[in-house]
View 1 (cartoon, rainbow, N blue to C red):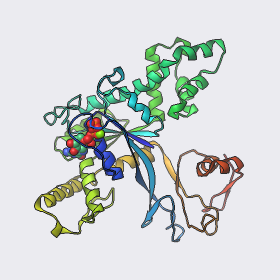
View 2 (view 1 turned 90 degrees about the vertical axis):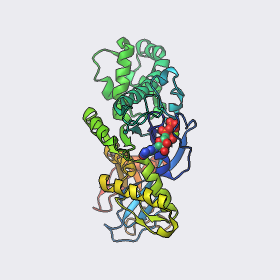
View 3 (view 1 turned 180 degrees about the vertical axis):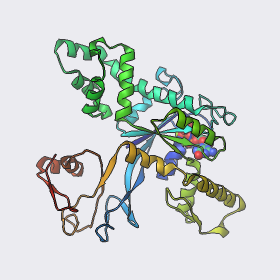
View 4 (view 1 turned 30 degrees about the vertical axis):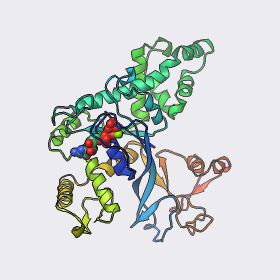
Length: 380
Ligand SMILES: Nc1nc2c(ncn2[C@@H]2O[C@H](COP(=O)(O)OP(=O)(O)OP(=O)(O)O)[C@@H](O)[C@H]2O)c(=O)[nH]1
Ligand SMILES: [Mg+2]
């Protein structure tokens, strides 16, 4: 699952709607979204049907011309303002809805058309660099508050009953689904033992832990507004270690809705589209499409599909696996050819795959076969 976060009024819900085609409330006033929106987006992976020259009939995904569209969950939450962890705006409690996410899409107003509190302002007056810094800080403070709530109790267990600090913190953060190895690797970077950590040390720990366990892609939105390009370069200079994807959620939403109505032919991520029903469009609609076509020519795509794929491929290092029961026919027990595709993080074992398919399968798992090489693979 991926979480769409950011300052209020930057285009998070537009981005969500463009990905999922779920109609949600969108408006140019801060705090339009209050309750989270949940939906299903898709990411593209190369299907193995072409490698095996076989016609597949997928169940959990769709195959179009050798490209598998794999469903992934996305959640769009309320917007943040500086000081949210102290209760400003809608506060940060709603971030609890993001506990289970694998990573974040951080939408920013690259055109600077909203001020620090999300109110519309003269284009270029808002500073997306400040926005990125404060939103990241609010995410850190959210996790810090979860840890801090029980910090004294945790220290008691570590000091009096000599429990392993890594296990104690892992247990406290279990709701966030952070792998134990990440917690261990960050704790080991600290020279001071945990009993001596100040609040600043805990915050530093959380900051580092967030970076490796919940990666973030910056979606530099509103790229259709001219001022955005200048800011995009500033953002790239300031945050060199981040994946930054220029995008226009508004353009993607327009294209996807037009495609749904059969007015244009367009697939998410495409660099162009074709108008199919020109005589059903008025001048205003044609002009809007021409504007989007120019945008695609300048940027290569609207960036929305790219942003979510960068999160899964580059940041989360997900690979696609096509499990089958019959290794000759490449089918499940019902005869569906290449029925499913499952996303696994690089470094996962086949036992992890077995558990993803079914918990019962994980329990009785003995070995798997790599169909391409014919090799037997043990559980690790
Ligand atoms: N020019 C331009 N405007 C956009 C784009 N994406 C969103 N907007 C506009 O930005 C405003 C805010 O959009 P929302 O999607 O409601 O923003 P949000 O971040 O979900 O806002 P809250 O839920 O209030 O925090 C709306 O007027 C959108 O039409 C874009 O790519 N380009
Ligand atoms: Mg919203």
